[in-house]
Length: 396
Ligand code: GLA
Image (cartoon, rainbow, N blue to C red; front, side):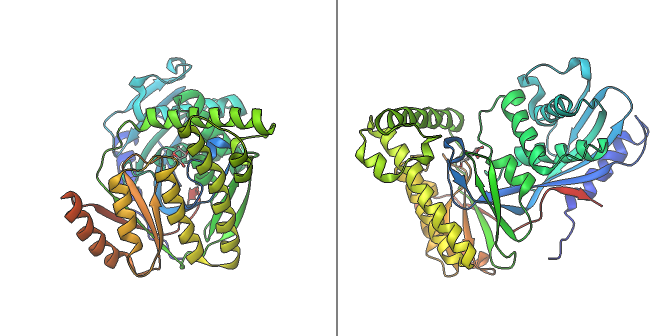
């Protein structure tokens, strides 16, 4: 695959020179990249111990990073105004709101120190080319880019699985977001030409072939803000915990909610109805993952696409994380020739959906979906075209 360098790469280099050439250790930074991801099937399963099936896209976060001999962390972003220049002694136990986006790299540094004992100062300029707040996991990509960088600069030779765990711990323990493991694992572990079948219950995984030439991913931005996304997300986490407790009492212990079968759920009484519906999404989504995995082994992307569409339906009806805009955009996309399937991306509650399509479909899709969407909502959605991408790495 030919990889054309992102304009962000040149920009972070230039900005680094402008801001830091004469400061600190003075040398040239090294360059790192970590991708964003789309999750094909396995919506909202990671925190219920289920399986997920993400693939890396050709966009993500770039970081120009240099080791320093002083005890300071300096961070600059191309996309955010906030900058920090912080002595180690001023790094709090847990992030506060003042740290803004810098909580992610600082959290990774804190976890890196805890794991390796290496307390090295560093300067980083970062910049991303993922569509903003699209549900393609830019914060995990930032964490993983910094984790890969700190490991390379300190020559600690941690494997990518360890770096994924470290990035995830940073998000949970320092930033304070109770997220599942999918995003950091996807960004750190995805390989070119493959989707990642990740079993979240025991954190084992397998790379399944998905040829980079076989599909494109169209991101469709409904422009509907993600209202209440955080509180609704936490509510779903609580509902799944309630379903797990009810099923464990009725059926017997399992490691996690995703390990109950649809038949066990139907035989048990899980109440209230909302909690039963959340559980129904989780246990049936495991079946869709299994079918998508089998389809990938056969190279049958049409079936993978059908699973995306079924997954959307289930997240809309049973899991209740969709909205009219996401339902319309995905249904309209599925009417277009060459589209394998479509579903909301990220946590849902507004924001973006993705369509998995045959290469060369994007223009046709944009024309049709725009027409349908404008007619219904009087709003023009935005589109972006992504392709399967490379994994997290140093750019040399
Ligand atoms: C967000 C979370 C992920 C995952 C998805 C839903 O992106 O960060 O861990 O739960 O929602 O699939």
